[in-house]
Image (cartoon, rainbow, N blue to C red; front, side):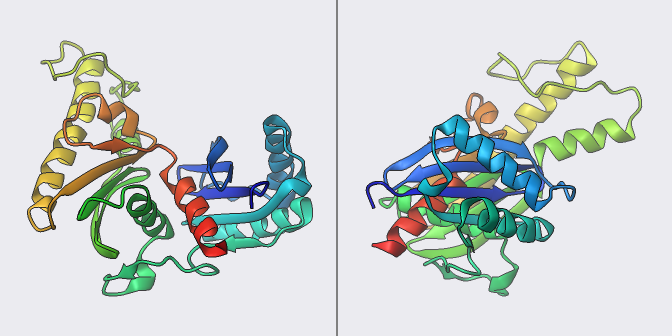
Length: 263
């Protein structure tokens, strides 16, 4: 498998992350707007060809195409695009390729594919800790708990960007905010933008620290906290609870799952 290149796709509501990887790691990654029902098989296929060109790969070098998706409407056009433009059948995880974690959810099929792939990736990348809390800052903020080789479940909380968008859309005089700061501790804001920025950044940091501490009380020790998702890098600067940051965790999970399956 030394020369095998995989297409990896994480299809979310906020964004679609696409990447190319091999048995050793992720080589290139791209981000597209997610939740867009206007994507067609041809528009996705042409985007894939452009990404291949930018990555200096030829379509025939792609030996497998894998995806996890929480947007069912985008699955058929991506399947068609992979078949037409890459000559590969899309492998959807976990429906086409199961994830080797014991799933303790009361209704296992209700767990989002992204949450399971993230939990699996966390365990594969960090096998030593007895338990892991994987915090993913996406459309929602999710906390997923893994103990040994078992997915225990987790928490679903509001997302940072969706919360900011909802607040701005319902309040005419509130400004758009950057969700960035150079400060390491919150200050009393003397403008609406600073007040909102610090409120969101440090509010979500405090929520993360508090929930991780409470979840860890019921998990095996030592516990490990891993952060991923678009907002993770911002919170990592102001939060004390993260042991590691892996922005491309889901792509890593798809890559590792395929490599381990093929061995």
